[in-house]
Length: 250
Image: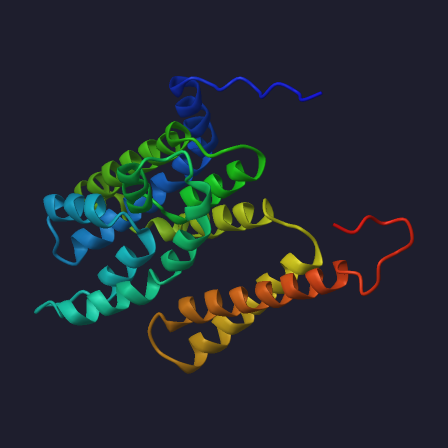
């Protein structure tokens, strides 16, 4: 006897569930947004330019890298290439999340991929482990974080002088702490540890040997390779070489 499928939740309920899930990360993003806005203003960007940058890029890591090498005259190609290196991980994130977007229409998939920040990707992947990923849930993840990032970076540019250096309060560790919590939510035992260790060692080694943001790509690729090897090893272990007595052959 087939069990009836669980009732689908309304759009409002899905959106609320997404917004509730992302709320702690939104709070953690506030001091980082203020910090970015203050630093960007010190480099000569206006509040409007900072708001437009956050609204169109929406990628804190690459924005910090761009501001770090920002100088007059602006080296557009150097900034673009550095941002590209930092955001190479989005190729892997997009490939990972795409199979979970079965309930998304064509245009919804493109919109979702624009908002695919690290935290949103992690929360969406975690949601997809237990139930189908609904567009409204994804919107609930993306909308609050997007609004918080654009508004706080803009506000940071306006109060940068009064804010001073937020890193002296330890605010610069907020995002690493968030990522540690997100990663631990995917912990599956020794295989997960091997992937994280490979990524960390590769990123650290590359950072010491090669200048720029190559360590981001190196860490991501090392993790992918180890994860693939671990998956293959698991499949080989699970595949019996002989058919045990009593098994059915189809």
